[in-house]
Amino acid sequence: MIENIHWLGHDSFRLDGSSTVYIDPWKLGAGAPPADLILVTHDHYDHFNADDIARVATPQTTLVGPAAVTARVSGVATVTLSAGETATVGGVAVTAIPAYNIDKFRRPGEVYHPQAAGGLGYVVELDGRRIYHAGDTDAIPEMRDVRCDVALLPVSGTFVMTAEEAAEACRTISAAAAVPMHFGDDVGTAADAVRFEGLCGIPVIVLPRERG
Image 1: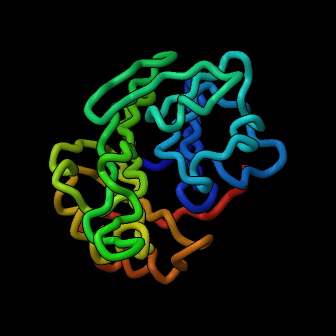
Image 2 (image 1 turned 45 degrees about the horizontal axis):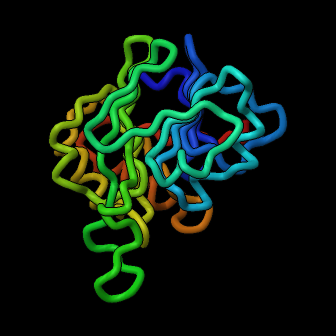
């Protein structure tokens, strides 16, 4: 179920298969394989990093992201998506899902990830498997429509769902398995992933952290 899914720390993943797909590449190690497709969820520095994109981009690479990201990209072909839209790039279908906060506040009345900012999660269809990367989000109503084999979910709280909220999201999302993310860097620890594993009603796989 999770074969060829590599957690690179924080919200960063590489999916290997007929195409090499990176999601939110950040702090990549030396020798990271070149990308066919790069997906960026939103424009915060720990998700959209020009140096890491340049490290794996080639003339054949396409980057998919919301307008706030693609407007700032140069030297790489881009596809701009809004929530609800789908694009197929090199045989990989990518559907954009909203990602936003409901109750994680920067200051009173101002959430860290407002819906109006256009942040995204993605359902990636690669080699017959559907992988949902939720992006930086709370448990939101739109998750009811997500159907996937593997759900990659943030669990650290503060800026995103807590482990408890992510476990509740698992009861909404139609998924066969879940992988915790968004811990071990700026916020969250391995204890959050373990707590999520104990609370979630579907199988949870805590992936080892890689760097390439």
